[in-house]
Length: 174
Ligand code: HEC
Ligand code: HEC
Image 1 (tube, rainbow, N blue to C red):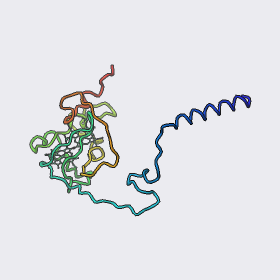
Image 2: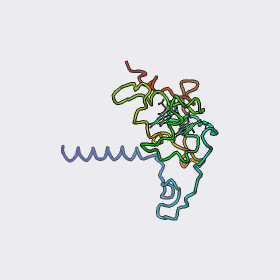
Image 3: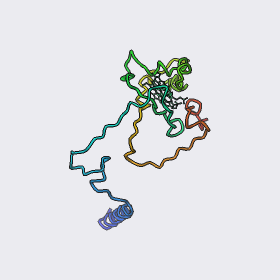
Image 4: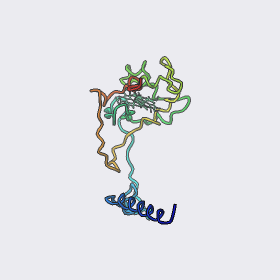
């Protein structure tokens, strides 16, 4: 490539970058962090929120964020954590044979399926589901730090309160 060509290409690239930057909003240092104050000051106030919530059996279910999203834990988990190898309080209420009797939502079929080896575990919970709180989280009544306009589109009438991942997993594949 001769010098002229290189120069022309550089100008073209700069032009594209320039056009690409038009219309982008810039943010000041005070707006960058989630705490919305200058990043050069460590005197941030940390508010204490109460995670305790209502005890299991008295809480209200929270609508799913989107179809087959892991439901959030609506009740307090005090005394249930941490989940250890020998002690999993969550399964003591949420395993299918027990759930109905205690008024809890039963764990779905997907939690009794080994996706890695494609094996139906015939009612045996897959070990990858053991630590519930890596996917299901407790909630606190705190204002959102960043606004979100996402609106979920549920294809089933009860998709906002029930999941069916295992039934729809292969949808569209043939
Ligand atoms: C004493 C029984 C009990 C224990 C222990 C328990 N839960 Fe629950 N859970 C419930 C009940 C009952 C509900 C229904 C809401 C209510 O009545 O408070 C529920 C609701 C939920 C839901 C919401 C389901 C939905 O459809 O929205 C999730 C998720 C959940 N629990 C996860 C957990 C996890 C994770 C643990 C362990 C840290 C746990 N639960 C321990 C009884 C229990
Ligand atoms: C790897 C992530 C993951 C782990 C770990 C996990 N879950 Fe889930 N859970 C999900 C997802 C995703 C869904 C919704 C889609 C589905 O699987 O049907 C769900 C759904 C549920 C539901 C709602 C069932 C329904 O019919 O709507 C309950 C109750 C539940 N999980 C309980 C638990 C409990 C209790 C544990 C621990 C023993 C656990 N989960 C571990 C991801 C997880």
